[in-house]
Amino acid sequence: MSTMFADTLLIVFISVCTALLAEGITWVLVYRTDKYKRLKAEVEKQSKKLEKKKETITESAGRQQKKKIERQEEKLKNNNRDLSMVRMKSMFAIGFCFTALMGMFNSIFDGRVVAKLPFTPLSYIQGLSHRNLLGDDTTDCSFIFLYILCTMSIRQGTRVRALVREDPTCRGATKPMHHNY
Image (tube, rainbow, N blue to C red; front, side):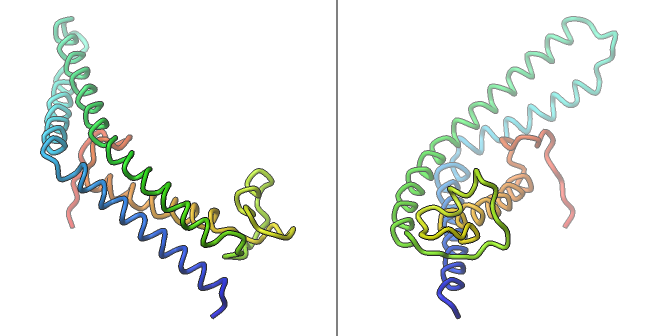
């Protein structure tokens, strides 16, 4: 097995481990806390209540009815904001950990070609894909480029899991999703 292939597998493994670390930090600092659970339940309750009110409202509804809906929407918006603030502390912790890890991994893989790209990257991406590499072959891939690609792919998977987990802070998840597995 070539060194380049081993480096590529190691970077994929590092990406998976850092994604798991991020999920673990988020679980410890956010998902298991009582405040998050309370806010999440409140958001779900308010969302259902608001949906019911919107379904029952008619076009001839009075101003008072519309005001009630507006107040309910404002309350829901405030709870969603509070929920996002609860998640903020985990984002800072993850950012700190990843900054430290990136420095370490950059020094380990500095100047090493870790993969060969099957294409020539766009000119504005070449600075990242060929970062700290010697030579002019733009299909050579640096650690940081492969790591970012792997991490983005894994994060997309965790984003899908967040929607399945019925995380109300995810954009686009206005209604809880129900699955029959």
